Image (tube, rainbow, N blue to C red; front, side):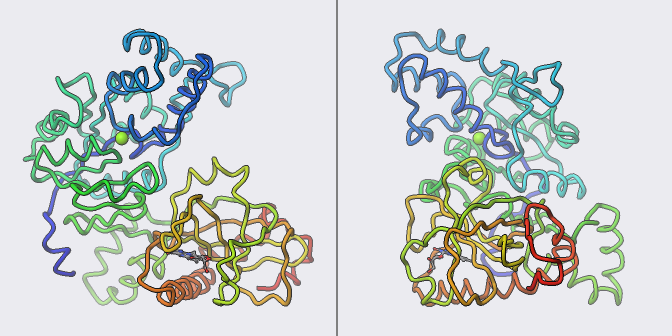
Length: 432
Ligand code: RBF
Ligand code: MG
């Protein structure tokens, strides 16, 4: 453990924000607001979204009424917009509608974090500026979530919402612990201020891109929950030991790791060779020309995908370095490592997808259909002091992906018949 790690305060409980931290609520909120504003002849300004993130519903409404010059009071606006959130949308059963809240996906890493803390009996509370009915409704669609929390504090349980520390004080009180023993996980600036004002340790996970620099009061800023390291705060580390990562197996491993088994299992439980297995997801399309940064010359010929039509998939996945399998319809299936994001070194305006197929091809294949199955995560995007160090790190990512993809949990034999990779060659020609 480094000195920096030791200097952090150790905690025994975790208090989590809900919207934008555990659940991808921002998308739903913007969809409703966009549609509502269009009816009033206004256009939603995505760049102003940060103004309402983490606010109490009343404050957010007041900001919108003012910024869009709406001819109504904040109260009128709230009473018109509220029913839209409870509107029924199409659900899996054609006979019934579903409230909008049921469709909200957990953010990447949220399910894993809750499961992990539950498994290790770390007391957890939920602290949200939203009214209790909404909080309860949102979490009720996620099995096991409600039971995970020893306390749930909603906006209507306290006098002042975040950035006031009231919600966090109340959560600590209900957990029966001192505020200084709590770690807060928050996506918004008002939420971070609230946690700090309550005297807690705060990890910020900004839900809007390129905002890291604004979170100066947080004790740590991470890119997504996938990057959280509980051991930095004195909590049990993640032990993603492939598909049978459950409490029982972990307990067995911990038991045996006291003895001579330590060496064998110690390796296995410290992540999978520096990678994190993910629920596989897909993205694909024709290969487009790159961004003219000479990646070919640098030895990283990326087969880029257009982001058009993929805004939804892209917004669901945090920026970072991932790996998996790439199917080229007439050539075969290849190992692949890729970056998604704004490339801090180049500071892109747009979030891009840059897959690097780990194979030497004799020719370019622009326009060919490329399908990706992403199976694991390596690291967040980073900035580098020189192009050489960026390139060296990308090559290291390539080696990590090469090795990981030979392991049974990620292996080609598991994915080669995946119809998404859609290779038309006979199986024996699907070279690596
Ligand atoms: N760009 C960055 O600015 N920071 C990164 O951490 C980063 N990681 C990458 C990892 C992989 C596996 C790949 C293929 C690209 C990565 N890039 C990153 C993007 C890189 O800067 C871009 O592909 C350039 O065009 C390479 O010349
Ligand atoms: Mg939030």
